[in-house]
Amino acid sequence: DVQLQHPFPQQRFGSLPGVLRTRVGYTGGSTENPTYHNLGDHIETVEVDFDPSVISYGKLLDLFWASHDPRERPWRRQYMSAIFTHSDEQKNLAIKTRDREASRGNRRITTEILPASKFYLAEAYHQKFALRGRSELMNEFEAMYPSFSDFLASTAVARVNGYVAGYGKCETLPQELDGLGISPAGRKRLEDLVCPPEEGKERGTGAACPAG
Image 1 (cartoon, rainbow, N blue to C red):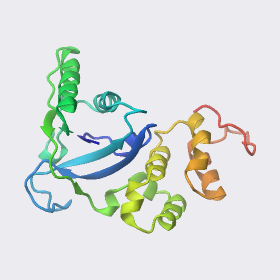
Image 2: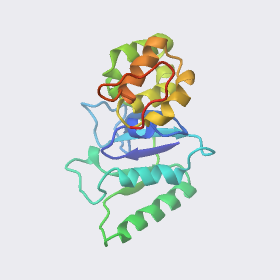
Image 3: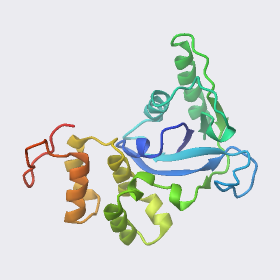
Image 4: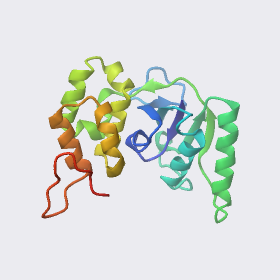
C-alpha cells in the first residue's frame, strides 16, 4: 500500500483502475488514538491499496504531484504535503520523483518523504465523503456491507466514490457496472450522474454513455 497526504481527497485515487481501496486517516505523529478534534502531531493522510500488476506506484506518485502545488507551505502540520513509504524501493522512487518536480522551473518542494508509521483510521463520517452525499447509492452499499470494515475494504465502494465525485470516466463505467453489485435503480442513478444525457436527448437502454 501507499500513504499520501495532499489536498485532493481519497476519491481521486479511488477512481483509478488498479486501486483496490482507500481509507482516510492520521499518521506521522506520536499521539495515541488521534481523532479529528484531537489530532496532536499527526498528519491527515489517504491510505491507498493497489494492485501493482494494474497500476504502478510511480503512477500513483504522478497523480500525487499533479494534483497539488508541492511548493506551498501548510498553515498547520496536519495539512502538510507528505509521502509515507513502506520500503526502500518506494522511498527511492519518491525521492526521484520529488527531485524531478524540483527541477521543473527550479522549484522549492516542501513535500516530506517519511517512513510509514502506525496509521489510525479517521472517523466514519470522513470516509467516502462523496458517496455519503448520494444517499440512494450509499444506502445500497450499507445494506451490502453491514460491517464498516467490509465497507471500507470494498473496491466497488472506492470506485463509486470516485465516480460520483467526478473523477471516473463515462466511457469506462459500462465496463464496471456489472461488478459493482448495485441494483438496476442504482445503476441508472450512477449512469445519470456520470454520463448525463445531452440536453434534448435521452439515453436509450443499454446505449453507451456519451464521452464526457
